[in-house]
Length: 121
Image (cartoon, rainbow, N blue to C red; front, side):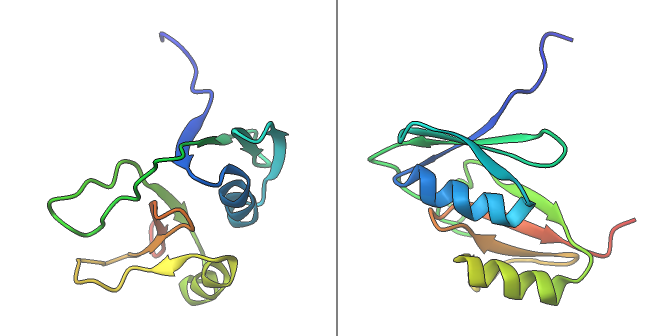
């Protein structure tokens, strides 16, 4: 092993807003916030960080000419309830044609795609 994973970092124009979204999504709390760098830690100690990128351009999923840049998969027990909750937090459901089987694709408030995964063993 070379090292241990410390953070998964997402660029955004609004670090605190995106951190609050993910804190609610994963049941975490904001532990650092200097305005340009905000960290969320979940109950297992996993860290998501959000850094200020004033010129951030959101990914264009599912545009085949664009890149997702990064995406996060979250396992959920009740997909319909989870969908209602993420939409209430400010997520957007991706409705452009793409293949979905045991997952649904959403965009966070900064435009990063994430998936709610269900029916997995």
